[in-house]
Structure formats: C-alpha cells, structure tokens
Length: 129
Image 1 (tube, rainbow, N blue to C red):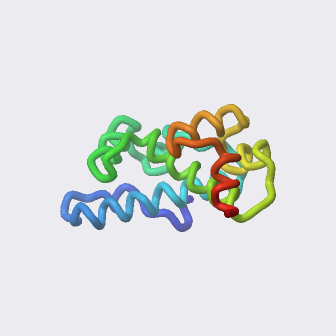
Image 2: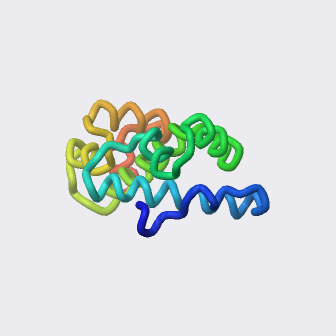
Image 3: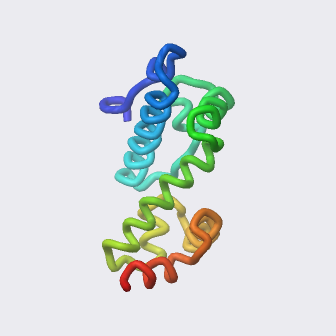
C-alpha cells in the first residue's frame, strides 16, 4: 500500500469535497486490493495504521466524504470484488469468500445479502441471463 497509495496529506481541508471523496475511494480500493492480493483480511484498524491516522478520525472522515462509516465502505469494496468474481469466474462461493477477504461463505452470504439484497447464487444467475 505504501508504495502506491496516498497518505494522510491527501485528506487536507483545502481540497474540494468531490476530490477528497474520489481520493478516499481510491485509498480504500488500493488497500482492499492489496489485502486480496496478499490473501489477508480487510481491517479498518490496519488501514488507519497505514495512513497514520486514528481509527475514529478515519471513520469520521469516511462518513463525511462518502456518507457511510469506514467498516461499511470497506465491506462495499469487498462486495464489489465478490460480485466481479461471480460475474467473471466460475469460482465457487468458498473460493470467492476467501478471495474477497470474507473468510467464510457464511460471512459472504450475510454481507452480500445485506448490501445487495440477494444471495451470491441469485446474483450470479441473474447476471448470466
């Protein structure tokens, strides 16, 4: 993350809200992608540490910039990746859960259902039509 991700200076007060939100989304995407590549869990506390920010401050900035708390923003990134894998691969749910950092199928189903309103299988079937 450090070699290509922005640091805390990218959240300065002088930037426009839209630019800050775009930068924040980029930071989240890079962090989550790094976790997927390393097959490590996605953790808000680790992202805060990498950015040298406190977790409460980072979560507050996330809510201000993207309208949801940090945990939900990270889960959205994971679900986007899981959805991509469901559309573009033949991986089973356990493999997708692991690849997207959910750990277990149960967690994948719970979070995917919470954010998408459907199951991963129903999403895959719908996308293949």
